[in-house]
Length: 166
Image (cartoon, rainbow, N blue to C red; front, side):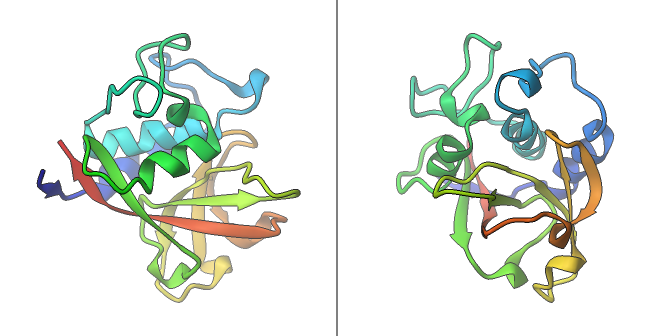
């Protein structure tokens, strides 16, 4: 499979447009655990146009009842994006180095305990790695152009999108 370029600005445009709204093509999971990873998946899909329909371990959305766990679950999303095999869909590198953050990347946040709980989408980053200069959009406490350092998190992990396989 050939790694195709991620259309970062399409993902960012989607994030800006839907940050304070809900796309009626997708279920709003806000009342049943949060909508952040669903929103991140929608943005990522806007930048790739490819889903992976592998049962259980893929990354896809057909309806609220017919979707992969990775579409809306923080840890499943991470596991899918950082998979080792070349299969359809986006692929990412996990890093603690925020200087790598680019528009369209995801940053997962851990607020308490040992399981990450939030997936905002990077909409702007100046390459300095300074969390006050990385701006994100998110659902679940809807935000657009929110500085990363305004979240009260214990840890973060950057998901730098490398591209996608069709």
